[in-house]
Every structure is written in C-alpha cells, then in structure tokens.
Amino acid sequence: MNWIDLRSDTVTLPTEKMRNAMAEAELGDDVYGEDPSINHLQALAAGKLGKEAALFVPSGTMGNLAAVLAHCGRGDEVIMGDRAHTFLYEAGGVSALGGVHPHTVPNQTNGTLRIEDIRSAVRDNDVHFPKTKLLILENTHNNCGGVAVSREYMLKAASVAHESGLAVHLDGARIFNAAVEQDVPVDQLVSMVDSVTFCLSKGLCAPVGSVICGTKEFIAKAYRVRKQLGGGMRQAGVLAAAGIIALQEMVNRLSEDHQRAKVLAKGLTTIPGLRLDKGSPNTNMVYLELDKETGILASECAKLLKQEGILIGVTGERHLRLVCHYWIRDDHLEMVMKAFQRVFD
Image 1 (cartoon, rainbow, N blue to C red):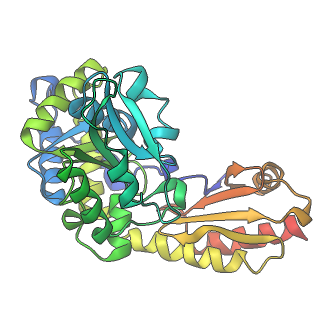
Image 2: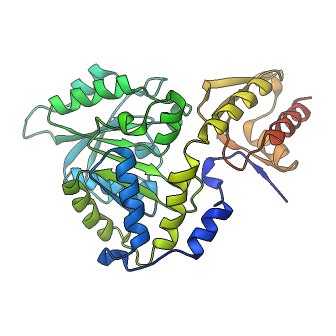
Image 3: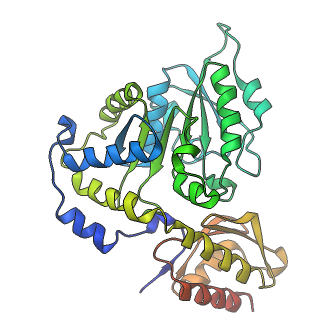
C-alpha cells in the first residue's frame, strides 16, 4: 500500500538525487579522518551554523548524548525542560551512560524555560550538591507542539547560563524548521549556544544521521565520546553524501511543509469533535485533541485511518499528532481530511 504517512518527519525517504549521490560517493576511513564525503559534510554544516567545527553522528540521540558528555563529567548536573526530548525520549542516556544528573524545570507552552527558573536552578558551590555545568534548550520544541523558539529568547536564556558559568547546548533536531518559520538565518538562531545538534533525517530527508557543531576544542571531545559510544563508523561517506544534498537543497523548501500543516489544521478543525492542541499548527506539526463526546479514542481513530492508508501519531488517550514532510503532497491533504470526516460521521 502507498501510505500517507503523517506519523513523523522521521519517515522521510531519501530523494532520487540523494540515492545517486550515495551510490557515487567518494569514500575513505572516517575514523582516520580520511572520508572526503564526511569531511565535506562536516565543513558544510559548521559553515552553515557559524561554528568552528562539526561532527557527523548516526543519530540525534547520540548527538545530544555526546554533547552532554563532552560538556559534563560524572556527578555534574544539566538543566533541561521537563518536556525536553533529551529528558523524555532518549532512554535516560545522560544518566545511565554518563552519570550526569538531570535537573528539570517546567517548559512553558511556547517551548521556553522561564528565565527565573533557569537562574534558580543553578546550584550553589556546596559539597552536598552536584555541580551545575550545562543548560539544554530545544528548538523547534517537539513536545510543545513543534513551536519555533525566538532568537530573542535564546539570547536571554544563554546569557543567564553563561553569567552563571554554564555552557549551553541546543537540541536543534529541527533547527532549520525554526529558522525558516521565523525567517532568521540559522547561524543567527544558534550564535549564542556553545554546541548544537541538528538532524539530517527528519524534514531534510537524508536516510541517516545528525551533526554536532561547536568549537574545535569541543568537537575534539565529542569525537572521543562518539568513539566510546560506538559511533565511529568507517566508510560512512555513503551516508554523508545524502546529508550534503539535504543541506544544499532541502532547507529552503521546508516552508512548503509548514504551509501544508496550516492547510491541514484549518480543514480538520471544521470537523465536529476535533480541536487543535498545543497551539497548532506550529512549523510542520499539527496536534489534535478529540472531544470526549465523540466516544472515539485516539488509538481507535488511528486504527480506522490506517484502514484507509493513512498513518498518524497517537500522543495520548485523546491526542494525535500529524507531521507534514517532503513526501506529503497537496492532494494528500484533501484525502486525509475526507478520511477524518468519515471516521467522525
């Protein structure tokens, strides 16, 4: 079946041009630093984000983990939101593998952390306490509805962290979505952070991989951590080749995904029993809540839609997520809205 897959932008397949580039990629041994395609991708990524250096990693989870372990030692503490991807969806890796203590503060509905909460979360220099070393921000913020966090806020949060002697890491899995949504150059959106991880395999359509960017000194530390985590790959230029195309050709078109999310949200809210959730639509995401009066649970709704060839994400008993991406066409939107209408008739 040719699915209309709205579960996530992680389901994107590489484009034909990416596949051709992968087949023709110039290769070497990346652990020796000799893969020209990897080196090209890393230089391209660092340049685009305005950082000194970059490191290719197999996944965003490994990228965030490697960044935390490069910034922190065992027993140190990292401040993050209670709805942050690193806290909720990365298997507790910073604690399990790094011995780093998470200190969560409440995420606001717009994805931010209150400045006063960040300031008050920084520990005093007391032998009883872990040492606060790092602040993690997220942009766009997935669990807050895919919202793009402003540069103005990022500057304020980073300033407070730096004044307190902390480094700042950005989980920027979808940072290009945030930049496109706000019409802000991506290097300006991350200029205030010490390190940033972004994903190649979501809206940018590459099949595998993320990139960590930061100073040369920081990336040298992350390189060692990557090796410890088993992320030192060999002729990985076959993957980097797709990532190069992703950065060169897939960023500017992200606005199409955002526009389709708006169209989808507008159409779905005309259906009785459906309402937008988490401030949707934000960037390429639409979160929905089902009224209790419908008598339909989110899991049942997803099952009925699957029978019509449509896949959606279930995020709660009465909550759904739909994510637009490169492989969602304009004609798909009408098909999805009609299918929802049949479910709720």
